[in-house]
Length: 616
Image (tube, rainbow, N blue to C red; front, side):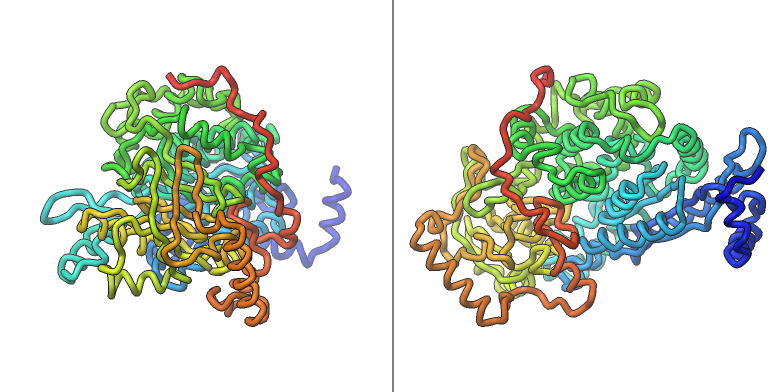
């Protein structure tokens, strides 16, 4: 007997004609057109990061089609055609004005996938994700939709090989010779660095977030590290994904059942242990928001606890690019991410009772995978780690009252004497001015300069571009001249950046944050003993007040917007400028950003790490 919903639908042949048509074209049972929908989605873009996605999506879609039907063991659902999101490639756009669209790509992916999931009423989704920002936008949309879903990484690219030195190469190898005058060398390295397809293989943002998504529970852990070209991604993983999703649908396991406070905390701890990208502290708050937690600092982990964990509890366990030697493909060869996740679990650093997309707890999934022990060369054991302290640190101080500034400590190559750097500010209103200087007047940068790049935040950019080109050139400059040059910005960095680089300084310059008030020659102090970044001159209330008034006058005379901000000449850039929240909340687009403004200094100190969690 038909239920009322089915009867209502049957009275609308105009709608039925398309669903019948799609079922015929996809070669599925016409009698299933009113069953709940299931389908596959993927990320697409314009670089080799995305080239492997379509093959996986088509493979999963076909295997899913073969398992749909009305027999007892079949999946009784309506199959929809695959859908793809669109995004840019970070690597191609670093150093250009188009880089402003990179983080916006996360938001666009969220929006387009939200439309697809909601309008299609998908009750089961398998997502294949690639590059940096689309995976986060994909998971955000999945969390907002909150119906059964599972994610698979498309996989990292295999390393290139230098034909002269026989050393491994990746995209960072190319960026770090950007300042060379040897055009033949630059062309050869560029041609040899990325020989295949897949996303960046170092512990940059892509692999930081793929590991995060695995540990948070939305991707099977054994699917994180294999290369994009690995045969398992088309021969083995598709059927496993379908089986896991079928179980989630039957047991009504939803993304918000998996992505919880405890699982997000697990993922943050693992990000510290791999020396992960600073971008994790833009993406984790955004994912927490999509999972229903409006304030990461209050609901998930305070900045004080974050720093306590990174400084005193969680060591770095991998010798990985950009601060080390190896890639995610090398990590896969040594057993995959499950190796160090097991070590962290065994050491009491993770909560193993969190639910995962396999239907198991994190503990149960690790027990079934039964990973090998750390090899001590690529993956290190907690008892003898690669680095004693975690890879990330959040900074406060008078330049960072939002406590949003982040330093990738694992990538610092020098300049911290007794955990303190003291330098002189060198101001650049926009990255393009810095790139011009690095190209034409690199000798003007002196030892212990602190380069300040501002008006590149979520509002100012708009879009908060990352600065891999700038940081790579500064790194090479410092190595060649044996000097220390730091860089701080209200923008952000690639996960491939190394050096004394501090991003996400907030509030940003475009809205009058303290970074807007620094002047050339000011003394900048980075103190990791206090986890602060300060400008000495701004400690003087008279100077602070005078500079604030001067800044406000400039803004007033320019119709309410500082003249150094980037041009918002498209609807998308204007939307980012009008709706972006601060980095401390994820730097995403939110229509009522007043809701997201609060003072993290109000956070209580009672939410510290449990006493039973310790460092072995």
